[in-house]
Image 1 (cartoon, one colour):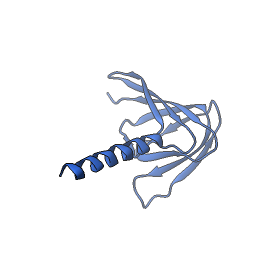
Image 2 (cartoon, rainbow, N blue to C red):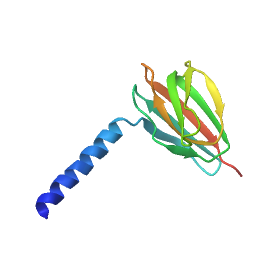
Image 3 (cartoon, rainbow, N blue to C red):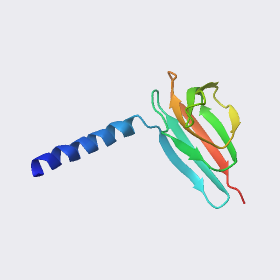
Image 4 (cartoon, rainbow, N blue to C red):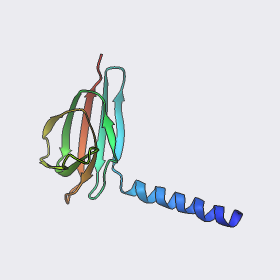
Length: 117
């Protein structure tokens, strides 16, 4: 039993480490009862992983722009590719999606979500 357990544990950790290498970096800059502000950094080829934005008012500011693919959770909806410039700002709706950097430059975003009162 012990001989089977060790390879399974090693496989789990190797899979977790490889999965995290493909993830972008998320840093919470401010989080209180009114607002959440995060910095998202997506090196080339990384993604956010499927996640849900629950607050209806969300603004994203692109510190470093690039090409992103927004992949909705609903498989009936088509993914959307956006090309954004440095300094561009977008208002985005509530959604569940995965964000992938499909371009050839790192993308850095500051995202602000106003929490409902």
